[in-house]
Each structure stands twice: as structure tokens, then as C-alpha cells.
Length: 396
Image (cartoon, rainbow, N blue to C red):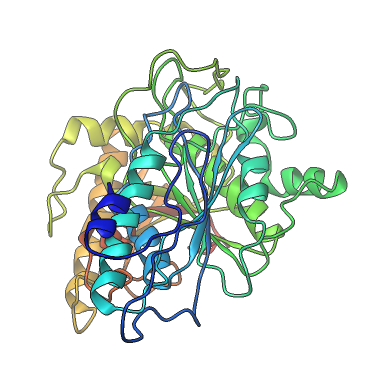
């Protein structure tokens, strides 16, 4: 254990992570020479824990990078499990108070490892899932310069006031959802200026029917609108969650998903992740054409029902490129490949047009981690194909 190792090395240590009953503040003693800067602390709220009908919680690399950034600032995290009754586990320091550079860095590495393992082991303790209430609790006491709130989970809340298990809620107008929450004074109160980093939104397991592209797109639009109305910004982390659900957890209601979706809300962009289309790297070739066709088939009825020309826009990661020419061409070819697949599925070519933007567009996100190093996992979030109806921008 960390406390024993440091004790043997001659360092006095305060409390470390209390695994089991919750979390407690963590600090290490001092040695000669100032090293751990305490003047720029940035705290983070974390909403995570395995629930029924969702993949077992495993923090993706981009999520771990967020926690690492908190540690390097010598900040703290507050952890909340999104059970039907949110369970606040407490707050812990993931940085260090040591005054010796080596001890400081060792503290930060060990505490990052501890908190990652701790979060991955958390499980729901009451039936259903409440992300809205959990976010509200996790966002409290973040300080004047918060790192943000990290949420891990499908986003399919099954409790009032946002019960997606109720018929039609998954396809509701995001603006109407926000209006209802605001009228009941139920928007999160501490998200002003806060970024909500969400990992695994729309990814499910167990008895839950997988979401179609339109269903997941509207789910994202609903949460985007909620976070924005609360004063924050939603940022989706790129890695899809996968794997099986943990067995024996409290029950979570299934959310109805229409197998043939014709209610697509074309007032916001429909985003298809690269992990759904599976383009071969640096090409416009589908690595699994049958899977790509299956994904795109979900959009055919709604495109035809919309009856207006849909623009298919390809986006690309920068991958440390110095100019956009190559990525512009690649993103155009990928948009053309999606159009060709949709036409093959029966969509009239006259209802589709294509364009590519490469990495120069409003939704591009940084591809470097907290240390400034390039991360392919973060770059993945910029590889997508976006469908929009006339008058709708790529960023909503």
C-alpha cells in the first residue's frame, strides 16, 4: 500500500483513499524543497459506477487523462454513483501536498492509480439510474476554476424527472425537455462555466435494446441542451463503452427504442461516430461494409420522411498535420462513401449532398492530453460523419 511504502521511506502520511465506506482527503508529508504547486488547484466531480443494462464501468483513457490533469494541479475529486438514489462517496485529493519533487510526482501517480481502480469497482446500490441528480451533486463545491464533471454511463436515466423508460421521452424535443426541467426548478445548479465530459453516452448492455443512430443522436441533443441550459458545456469523450453488464445489480428499466426510426429530429445534427462506420485508417473504405450498411439503414426512413436535401459532412482528426488539405480530401471521400451506401440502401441521390471539412470546423476538439502530448484516443472524437437538414449547422 502507498501509506506503508512512504512510511518505510521516512515520510509521514495523512489519510489515503478509504476504499469501502467512501473517500477521505489524502495528503503526504513534506520534504525539502518546494515542488507541489498548490496555487492552481482544479477540482472535478465524477459520476460513475456500474449499473444494470450498461457496460461495466471501465474508465477509458481519455477519462483517465482528465483525472490525471486534476492530480497534476493537486486538486480533488468528488465521486457520486448514479444509482436511482444517487450515492455520494465523498471527496479525495488526487494530487499531493509534498514539498519534494520526487515524492510529489510519486503521490500523483499512485493516487491516480488508486482513484481509477476505485471508480472502476463502484456499483449501483439502489434500483434505476439518476444521472441528473448525480451530476448536480458531483458539481457542488468545485471551486472557482473547476476541471469539470466527468460522467461515465449510457445517459439513459430511468427516474423522474427524466425517465427515458417512459414511452416517447427518448425522442422528445430537447427544448421541451429543458423547458419542463426549468419550470420545475430541476436543472443542475452548479454547472455555470463547467465542462461536462461524458464517456459512453448511448452505449448499453444487458437487457437494453441498442440505440439506433437517430435515438442516440436525440439522447445527445437532450443532454447537450440540459447542460447548456444549466450554464455548462457538454463534451463527449471519444471511446465507445463496450462489454457486458455486471450481474446481480439492482434492476434498471429498459428504454423503448424504435427499430425503424421515422421521428428523427432534423433540427439538430445527426452524428455518426467513426466507431460505428469503422473506416480503415486514412481511407474512405469501410472495414466492415455489412456493419456500416446496417448502421446507415437506420437512417433511411427518416431521411425519406424528412423530404429535404440532407448534407453529409465528413470530419477528420488533425493528427498533428500542419495544414488541412489532406484531411479535407479524406473527409470529403468519407462523406461520398456514406452517400453511396445510402443510395445503395434506396435513398434517392437527389436527397443527399456531400462536403468535407477536415479538422477545420466548429466542433473540433483538442487532440492533446493534459501533458500536451498527442493522443489518438482524443483524436478519434474528431473522426465522424454528420448529417444535417437545411438551415442546421454542424454544431447545432
